[in-house]
Amino acid sequence: MAVATAAALLAALGGALWLVSRRFVGSRAQRLHGHGDPGLMHGKTVLITGANSGLGRATAAELLRLGARVIMGCRDRARAEEAAGQLRRELAQAAGPAPDAAGELIVKELDLASLRSVRAFCQELLQEEPRLDVLINNAGIFQCPYMKTEDGFEMQFGVNHLGHFLLTHLLLGLLKSSAPSRIVVVSSKLYKYGDINFEDLNSEQSYNKSFCYSRSKLANILFTRELARRLEGTNVTVNVLHPGIVRTNLGRHIHIPLLARPLFSLVSWAFFKSPLEGAQTSIYLASSPEVEGVSGRYFGDCKEEELLPKAMDESVARKLWDISEVMVGILK
Ligand SMILES: NC(=O)c1ccc[n+]([C@@H]2O[C@H](COP(=O)([O-])OP(=O)(O)OC[C@H]3O[C@@H](n4cnc5c(N)ncnc54)[C@H](OP(=O)(O)O)[C@@H]3O)[C@@H](O)[C@H]2O)c1
Ligand SMILES: *[C@@H]1O[C@H](CO)[C@@H](O)[C@H](O)[C@H]1NC(C)=O
Ligand SMILES: *[C@@H]1O[C@H](CO)[C@@H](O)[C@H](O)[C@H]1NC(C)=O
Image 1: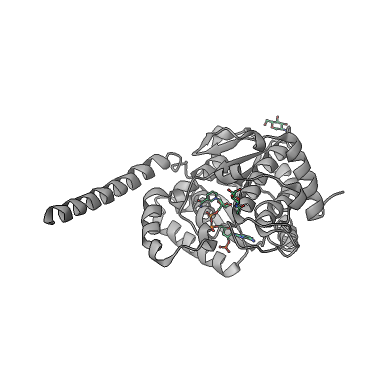
Image 2: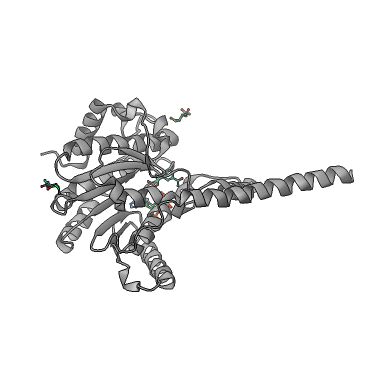
């Protein structure tokens, strides 16, 4: 009996140690690109959607550290101001010999679930900002219950794809006049389980929250590839990435039974990336000289990766583009 208990305790201890070691070995390996030169983004303006939380927040922190003027496009001003305040304090505490090298943070209201909000946001930005060097389409919503945006689109398709589609369209002139400039799109490996079912883009016939998330992330990739094709010769590049599995607030709509929560916390602490680790590919595509001129590619862990054929289908990409133009009301 005592032997069995001791064995069980030893096994638990061994398991815990293994998790801890995995955690720390993993984190070192993931931070290869976190040491950019502090002045790298000096003089550059970057817009990050959903910059108050998770990957967007970590991306904002790092680009700020690299000297960028970072515009946080967020749907909730209070949450965004709070995050901005924290980021400024963290930066002030961490500032080494040259605190002046850091950039600045600007908070602006942007609700991607409202085309009216996207238009108002862009109108203001175009009036106030003389340039835009990097646009990071990062905001996202994951497996929510069936909801519609203000304009009647299924929420995940509406926010993750259509809101960003209109945003990018309205900012393209400024990006072009600021060239060389970059667009970075945050997708997910889960795109693999999606399809663009043109006959029910608003999921009125049936709603499957996993499918709709995957569909929106597939749309992010098809959008990137079609946009890259349209932007050839402009010196505006666009690339798409998957961040891996990251500990953020993305799972807010997923219900985990109370009893399973400690286990989930342990597993996510041990195996999920931290937001800063997860943001490395966004930061890399936004700032690294290594990807100057590279466009239309898919990245993970700061390296190019292959796509499934369905994400490279040019006719689906074109059709999605045309329908998106009609849905957001920009068809000339
Ligand atoms: N975490 C992962 O494991 C993972 C894996 C693959 C891909 N991704 C992708 O990574 C991106 C960032 O997600 P995250 O993991 O950092 O999650 P997160 O912590 O939940 O951050 C998502 C951000 O998007 C914002 N957002 C949601 N709906 C919006 C709307 N209607 N208008 C404007 N902003 C809106 C959120 O604002 P509020 O705070 O106001 O809600 C938040 O700032 C997403 O595109 C997601 O699909 C994440
Ligand atoms: C929902 O979609 C996912 C991903 O496409 C699929 O694996 C799953 O079987 C679907 N669920 C139902 C109930 O159809
Ligand atoms: C793109 O950049 C190259 C190299 O800097 C430059 O020669 C070219 O004129 C630029 N093209 C446009 C359309 O800005």
